[in-house]
Image (cartoon, rainbow, N blue to C red; front, side):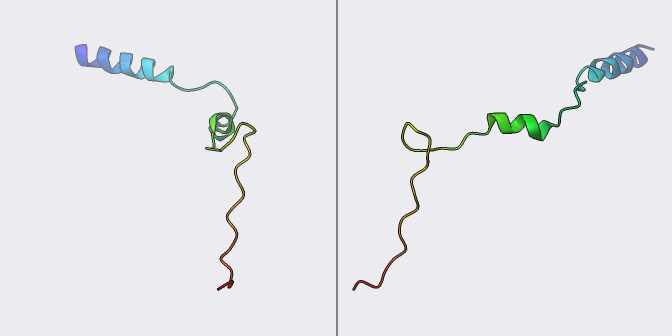
Length: 55
């Protein structure tokens, strides 16, 4: 009987882990997406020029 109570408590506690919002997780995850940049303005530096045949 003790195992039944433990199983019911586990089920009830797991029900609180579900979100009640209709918002997608991928949408909220984009708020916290950070990109490493250089400088204070947040613009990444341009890519280096392709190697030329200057030799």
